[in-house]
Length: 173
Image (cartoon, rainbow, N blue to C red):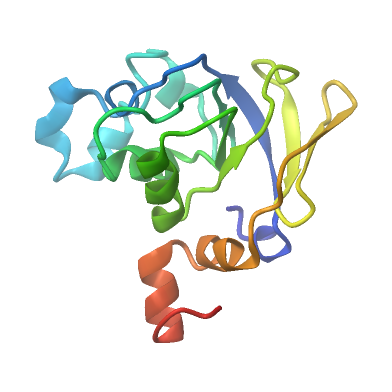
């Protein structure tokens, strides 16, 4: 999350729209498996098989917007991690594969379950994690989602689960 607004739970960025069933293979191409020990290099290829231009276009804080079943497939923790490393501020989708959802929170990447039908490619969004609102500035439209539990926001603010546990010498519930 951007450092200036991180603790307020406010995220701002541009949307990149993808469809249903975006798998971990599309996020982190299996043919680049040999790069998993070089995550900065692998991050240069994030979502390459879904949009070959994505890694070159995404800016820090931008959002990936999907449909149903985002993150299905193998439980590669590096899939959400390289999204975060590439600058993705959050992933919004109608539904997530459970392991992808959990891995994302663990690495400090916000994932929000919401209706994404009214979000288009390039829309400017302001997301309030605490209130559960997505303000689509491009369309002058406010969408709702279930606010994240406070413990998840703490984990995200600390940069992920390991950082949270290290900082707090355990869980800070």
